[in-house]
Length: 445
Image (cartoon, rainbow, N blue to C red; front, top):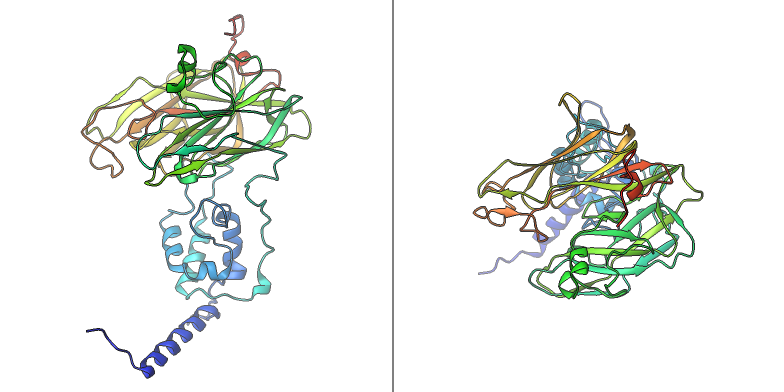
């Protein structure tokens, strides 16, 4: 039998709710005389600095944290998330390195948020609010000078695996361009596992038999070179994207180079989510206002020859390489799949000693970039090492099949081991010239 509430009881409930709301919005003084934090003066500056890049309209977070009403209704869950350091997401071990894009809250900021929630989220005086943070609508970089989109949307099925999808987009650049900032924006974020945008100069032979302006996969290619090219390339990278990753914004005097007449090649890894969709990813570009003194190139440490045994909970995979010329190390972007557990970037000394530059407690659902607060000069001959640990056991709640042996592969139930890293070199060095060691003159394929 349904419960009936009398008119009087309903009125009492409404009065209690109104009183509770009133308590939430006014400042209370604790018995010890300490005034608790208030939203406009104490909380809003923290949110602007650490949260609103994602938590605003049109961005990746599921809810905005801009207005008092946005935040008040979630005060308790926000306090729990920050107290457990689940938000803002950041997975670098604090003992290794310092990073300019670290959004982590200080202990004082965490305590301020918790105290505010415990005090029933008082608003304070709106006149104490800092000026609203200025954002470019639809971007986390400055207003792009140019937006290059995949010319044709990609139709995505509701179910099943999707082969790596490529689309070649001509830039139409009539002159060489230096790129200061760039940002990849999928139109269907939930379907994009990750994306890589490559720079294909006009003299490159890579994917020259592939169609331009329409999506294609390796299976669509009729010649062996193109099929191979859809799985491997040494072309320079403009930008890598995964959920949670940051756009590129290079320090003054540094930029990426796009030769006149280049194409951008979008490599898209899509996943399905139970309903048909389409995606037309684009990249926004901000040009440097003058030629830089250093050119940024993206390199990688990769190992694609491994087999992770069933049930292994700490399986180690390593890759290492020696820098052929001097370079200034700028940032890191580790990439694994669902069994990824930990990723390290190290310098291996001449005596075999290890210096850890970055250690990441890997989270497949938050693949972040890590930008050094102080770029580091590495001399030619420096050995870099990447070490990945995998959990293929039943303790890994994201493990698709703990009874399977796992190898390199494109799909999320396969694995990858890629340690991207960005370096700045002389402006006249492209990726090929950088890898010419002193005294060697290899031919460029």
